[in-house]
Length: 613
Image (cartoon, rainbow, N blue to C red):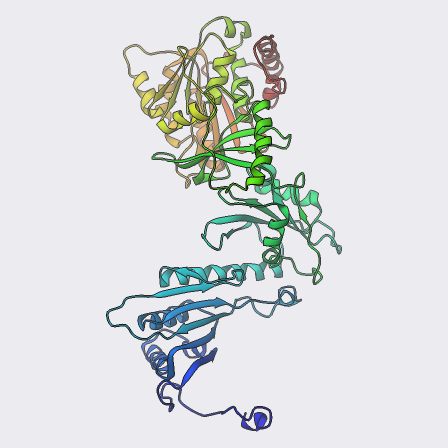
């Protein structure tokens, strides 16, 4: 090295020395540069190795001046990061970790040289302060312009690990397509909250061409719950129809502010290129796609936390037909709409005008106006948004006599209120109906009343109780009520189960016997079933069949939901043509002038695919 640099760098000295016993005087340098030495020495966590590293790092501290920096280039393996951060933080130094950026050409080169990111530890020596316990930890990632302060060494290690896992994922996605379902969250650099959720969808059947390699699809706000965007099969269909080998779908999170498609594209461009497939030409222009060319509309009307249901939000979103819809979302399951109602056109029009006015004000997304419409105002009560609710209503055709449904009392029990759309629809369209709705969470009654136009009446009462306890109490009473229709539309709060609706206790045979005991002989028990575990679903169907010998199943297209119609007597069986005839007769009755029936809702269509188990 002396010979090679004698003429070019005469001011440089090359010395042979033991780094654990350096011969320099104290405070000799302002910078100590370590290019991989710490990684090379710290090969394991045996006592002998750790003692050697302690001596090395102590010497670094000795030869540095106060304010000087130890700059160490490292792969930041967990045990290396732990040792370096632990040592210098105990000495009272400021600890900062930088992720070293890769150039765009390196990202897209034919054979990436490295699948793990490189980090630079920058440890700044402070003057010792007796009795001070101050520790400073910072991370500066390549996508951030300024360091982020972290509270502990553990948080710093977790942040580094996330970036290592992301880099590994990018390398795997580059080397091969079809890894299966891949999703990741990109978080706000200042708050750490999720800002974008990305799904990587590969379509190996798409023929390769210069323009078919890669595209980004921005899902309009409020539409991420739709089957095409929210389910894996839907995203595969979207990718195939778009005609790209790899499609990245991007969902925008509520509580985040977005200025428009151009700003989102500028924000995401560098990051999404790291997910590009192999074989894409360097500096290839990547198209950003969407529906309608904008990012959609989402207005958070109300946000709160229920002791039983957790955090929830009420928001208004714009559909693809420019109509507005109000939704209830439990934030523990952000991609599932718990309840939904369509807003009346005049309200939608006012919301659209208000949106244009708000664009000028640029009101922050986290500061929504909390002004509800009065109960019964603003909500289109004639329209059922949820397909499974439409199917449940169609199941009333199993009561056989449409005319009597409107002219004679109809006793109905609904377990699970949500936004109240289901019992409210029955109440409005069946004038002789008497409805008991059971809801375990008092917060949901408040939400339904304040935000979804729900109201109780002399024909519709809400009971705040556990549905299991309520039905058990009715079944064990001296005088049992008898309902013509019993509906279960209640979700499970346990995400670990293979069945999210209803909770398993609601389909236990002893409990089903209690349900049977309060159902009229000609009545119908209607159940919304959401079960991804096929074995568990077979068990549920067998249990229902043991109590209710006549069982129909209606699958909701594009959803996991299946609606089960249960009756007590096999001789009540209606063949499909007969069932459709009854449904059409019921619908004709409901379509009479003045009843406010929505023309897009066809009862008989809901029953065409019903199958008898």
